[in-house]
Image (cartoon, rainbow, N blue to C red):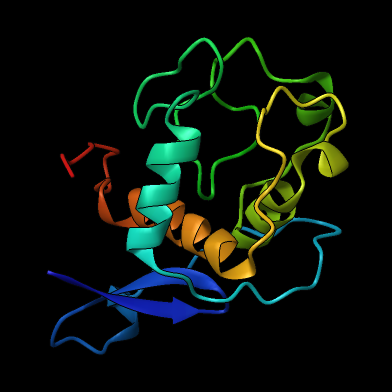
Length: 154
């Protein structure tokens, strides 16, 4: 069973009852020119509800839809790495990983970050709700996928 540990803003793992460093994994993803903000913690339930009401119309967890790519593994995924044809040109012009900070910057105002984005969301203005959505996306990647990338039913 896994317990949640936070290291430098990224989620790592620690096996219960083990404190050795070899059982810990830390996110090694860094982006150049990333904004310096601390992304606060949110509420998973609020993030899941927001996702189901505002994101699920265009995004599925596991399958790319016509309007948006799948989002189960978006956290720490390289932008534009999914074989999805409807990405905006601005989004594919840059290479970065979807860290908590990049997700914050994008979801706060998608058109400011990428003017030609196809995202229909105007942005999440409430900081707690924005943090909740990011926590939910991080939860999906870390706690519903195993090492081999197999998805668990949630």
